[in-house]
Length: 437
Ligand code: XUL
Ligand code: CO
Image (cartoon, rainbow, N blue to C red; front, side, top):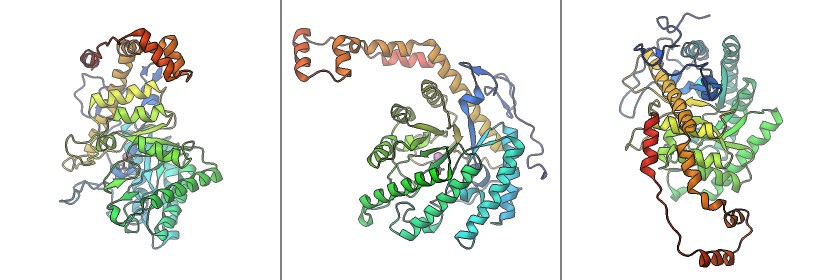
């Protein structure tokens, strides 16, 4: 076992809401039961390798500031392997049960494709060993198809067949390892699957190529016996001007159009919803109503900025609604809450990694408690049920069953006279939520 990377930090424990210790949980009590299930099982927290281990905290105007004393700064495979122990020490100390990674977060490019694959093999062997030793699990794996210049025009939507082929090779290998590591899912985030300008883009052809690519991924999944779920992660823009998977509804439409809906669910990210101009709750409902919510990337944008700032989630309101929808759908099964979040550039010390994750975990633990309280209280659901009461009548039922015509509606309207309206009571409902928070 390598020397500790965080020698002065003990395992973070639950100390309760009155604790002032920044290295303790105030609300996340892993084994505490909510609605009969432990917080750990409800929340299924995951840590993002790319942010926690690899994000230097640079911005477009300044270099990285993150202190990573365990990292020698090189692209050597030995350095990549050494990071694995640091990461698992972090997971252990922070009480995070799962992790997520891209192939290129964990291992470097080699001199050619075969060498790149061998690099991934070496690091994934170290990941497998660390998982075995610690009991930590892989929530999902993915391939990074957006950093390397070969993907400047896209990967599965590139104008270049050569880039498309490389992308296929990368997904194949990343999926093989996700399977080998017992991953519960595999994510497709189309970082560069979209366009910068339509002046040079054959959008129809690109979308068809993407669909063929995803069908090949489904075939490969079957051929290797991978039983995890496939997730598409919507995002409207950044780095492209327009990404094809722009929001939950656009993804679902794409999957339906190309006969892929049976094979994919969605991985919804809070800040991507905001960038799409939707609330996260809207995105969640869109996915859940289609039976397609798979997993969640929990983070937070910066209001009114319009960039993907990937802040740690500290908004109770957001967390409460996310957990409310998760409880309503009966819980996450193969998915989890992945902190796709980075510290601010000014929070550059290793201890800030702990502070950031603790803040996120406590926020979601509180969100879970608030959501359970809202459900137990029942006033909001009762109001909604009451609001749709007229649909429980004989005619309402027949409309819902598709047994009526416009003639029937006219007969009813003639007989019934002018509809009587009732208040939507939004402000009453908003006040109920504030009661719970
Ligand atoms: C980028 C983003 C990705 C995906 C995985 O905005 O969210 O990190 O989660 O590729
Ligand atoms: Co994400």
